[in-house]
Image (tube, rainbow, N blue to C red; front, side, top):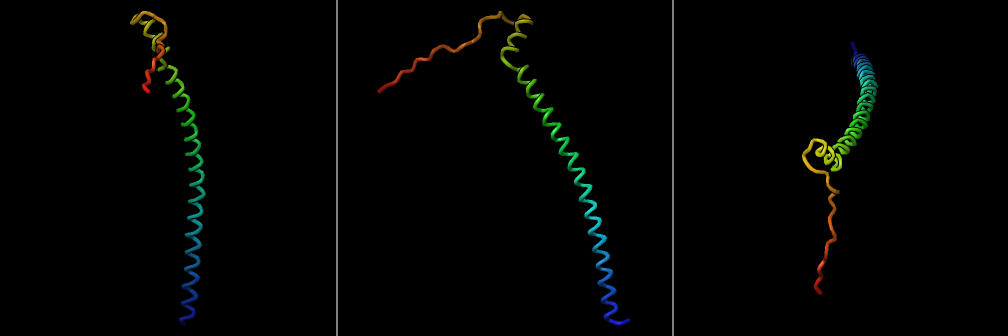
Length: 93
């Protein structure tokens, strides 16, 4: 065979191989997009669930709730709420 025929045959084989590789990469990217969308949806769901759980945690760990539960269990007498008194500030000039 001639050198030009081998060169053209080699170029055609290279072009076909690159086209097949490009198609397979494009297919992988498309399926990765679907997976990425599913992961994003799960992430949004977990963020919503975390915000709900944080709200429940804050409600259950509030001082008024803890004081009421302690009173219900008999650990303390229910007294007035704890309030800091006025602070006096002494300034020297």
